[in-house]
Length: 124
Length: 420
Ligand SMILES: Cc1cc2nc3c(=O)[nH]c(=O)nc-3n(C[C@H](O)[C@H](O)[C@H](O)COP(=O)(O)OP(=O)(O)OC[C@H]3O[C@@H](n4cnc5c(N)ncnc54)[C@H](O)[C@@H]3O)c2cc1C
Ligand code: SF4
Image (cartoon, rainbow over all chains, first blue to last red; front, top):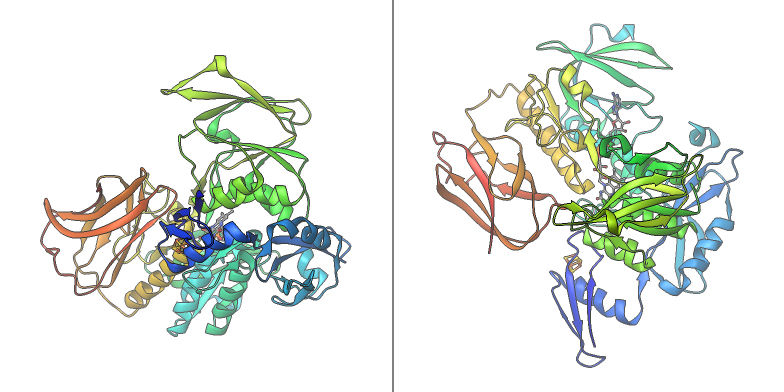
């Protein structure tokens, strides 16, 4: 097996050349050790951090940004998005506060990424 | 604001984005009275609408989303003692030694601040359809990528059901993923250049993850549709020629234009700052001061940044320079800095030997392995390897105070990239 990937962990965006199997797994082109781990994960268990907005219970169409606190297995992303879109958030919320806990028993939480104290703040 | 009439503020910062907040944090920490004026209803600037992650890897050693980064720098600026006013638009900057900053807000009406130093931190605006001339009627459904981002991330609207993105800048790429995750089908990204304008990581995680085709060396000829966008006509470029006979059509009801940012500089010119045609921002000397005495600039208003971390470090450098300036430091003779091979511009435009100096620059073309060279009067005085040079990424060169290879009496410093 030989594959080319771009490491997405930082803006350097190293071009990774991945070869070998479970025992002779080899990565070239990474400028730091995180890239090697990324390459391994990308082949065996690809994940992405999910960011989205959740609707609030405010009367206007106003929303609050959220993110998964660690990367989500790619195959579960759509399910997680559905869950976020179907929820209605009650204000106030604090940046870092948990919105969805332990999604699908993955130990992954969805957290708010902005502090919103009141509807008034959203309307402005 | 009448109570302010005779009061003098040390530093007035125009714009409360990453640049303004980061600069204010440091000037206030140095005990300088600092006011930040922001037009929008909240501080944070463009970061507020960038809900994706990837911010702060260098600066906070942590991967944050835009709103999280904004909230952090906001709290840092607040804790340092900055006075901040939102909903406040600055209309004019005048005055020679003492600067008069004229602004207005619904809350306080028209008011004036007297400042010993002014920081321009107004950010940038997007190029639009008018800037790149595409034929067709004016149907609904054409957005700049940033406008679409604001609509989706601040207001919660989804702009359409099938989209085409014109231009492969990072904002467009980020929006391709955002749209896909919101259930909008992105049919293509069209790029006129033979390479993508955005970062490789964004090509990987925003296009390849969703199998979105990227058409390089292709020009958008026409936007079709009368009331609402229906499709676009696209033709490949071969040897600089548009191949009309190979024109193809892509259907869509929504078009996002991601064709670059332009520094927002009407106010800078009013303040008397000369602009640099290469950056679209003001010319600055080794003190990061514009051609208007006491007026400094940082962030996207100075030159377009792709990394907020660099915006913050540049802004903090400006704050240090302001401390020296207000402390009575007189300007030392400086050496001009100029772009050489494969460099579009160098900022700041001057170097004062013996000072801690950081230079930011943009390459013109891709180079796999290169050396950053600095020449003075034809003499090589700095030589450092750099890898993966690309126009989408800004380069940074640091010269420490003990760098003594440049002759103060010598000619310009020429920054060049040489392929290895
Ligand atoms: C859409 C987009 C996506 C990006 N994605 C990333 C990313 O993934 N990772 C990363 O590291 N970087 C990213 N960047 C780059 C980085 O975040 C920005 O370059 C940076 O935030 C710009 O900060 P700024 O303070 O210079 O400008 P801005 O954030 O634009 O702030 C300027 C502020 O000035 C205010 N203003 C303007 N004129 C006036 C006036 N006359 N009076 C009062 N106020 C005024 C504006 O309202 C605005 O709030 C992105 C940039 C954009 C535009
Ligand atoms: S390998 Fe390291 S340096 Fe390269 S992109 Fe990944 S995290 Fe960044």
